[in-house]
Image (tube, rainbow, N blue to C red):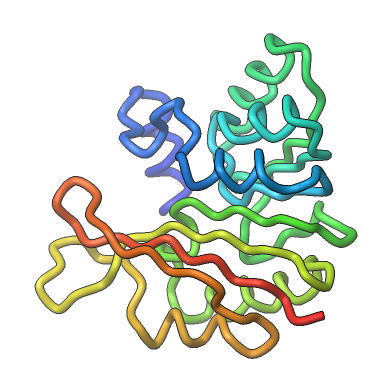
Length: 187
């Protein structure tokens, strides 16, 4: 059902999450670290992939919306850039192999249920090179939240284990509490 909902929103142009702008947190990280191999989980129409590739990163992106994947491929071609863009689900990641230095997730993890989050975390351990940085943006879950998704403190701590939380910035997005998290894989 989620896939159908997302495809319908892309078809109707009602994708409030697809701003076409690279978040300043991503811009700052990419411009202040040497290029490596990057993965954008839930890459949407490829805004961040274009930015990564234009700054020397070997970038891959996945999204479970065929419409978003096709739009990302068109955006990269139009910019004259190369990046891998795959139709895949962040809970399976069957098309993604190898180790990454930087993984970006803007709005995927906070949408997953418990089983999906477990599969997602398993894939992270498979794909993160030692020292890899994972940046996650998501809505915060609160008891008063009107949306059915979000990150609780327990969700954030579950990302621990092989990952160390290096930075956290709490904020608000359209009146909802939000959070940026920077994790690093232990060497």
